Amino acid sequence: MRRPIIAGNWKMNKTVDEAVSIAVGLKRKFYTFSEADVVICPPFTALSKVHEQIVDSSIMLGAQDMYWEESGAFTGEISPGMLKDVGCRYVIAGHSERRNIFGETDEDVNKKLKIILKHGMIPIMCIGEQLEERDNGMTFEILEKQLTRDLKGFAKEQAARVIIAYEPIWAIGTGRTATPQQAQESHRYIRDFVERLYDRETSVKIRIQYGGSVKPDNIAQLMAQEDVDGALVGGASLDVNSFTEIVENAVK
Ligand code: 13P
Image (cartoon, rainbow, N blue to C red):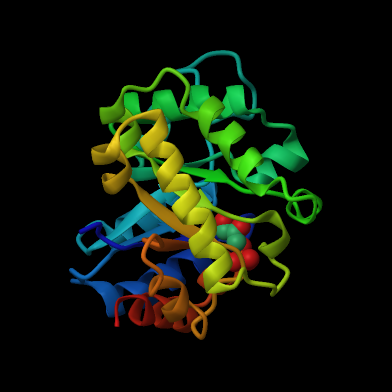
């Protein structure tokens, strides 16, 4: 069976001290924890210090983004090697905020996924539709387009290592979660499409997280869906108690 994976995307929040204090709190709860992969993605400035706190625990470190070049004249950017150096094992790529606010394209996401895998890290690739697209019945078309372009040129062994995060944009930070049925419908579609792109073995292996207003009181129902393998949590991952409850309720 697919191992559950709960990740916290802290976005542009928390100073180093605040981040360390959350890490310390989570470490108390998940020093050893075998029922799911637990990942936290603090801002770049806090990665190193948070890593020092969690390095001997079962919590893993992730970054929220990076650039696809190894080094050079790319002012303001962070390379995959730099992330590896500070202990990152996961990197989020193609979050809707990157796509919509910073103009990131599917081609950019494809380059990022490639280099993340090349460095032995695991990409969390975000896809999802806007409200207008859902209302116009275009959800599946959007998901197909993103999957096809983002995974372009990937062998099935590479694709199987990618974590897909289905994040319907209308559910992010809005308090409006997709119903478990809506999540399941999209997750099933994504898994079936991965089977069409690759094969059944790959589609059965690939892990698909749901993201968008995940909270302690809705995670269990989401996780009860056959094709929901975890969650990418924004706001509710900024608090030790709520993220802890989410992880605990996810594996109950
Ligand atoms: P919220 O959980 O705050 O809706 O954010 C979801 C998200 O964008 C995670 O990447």
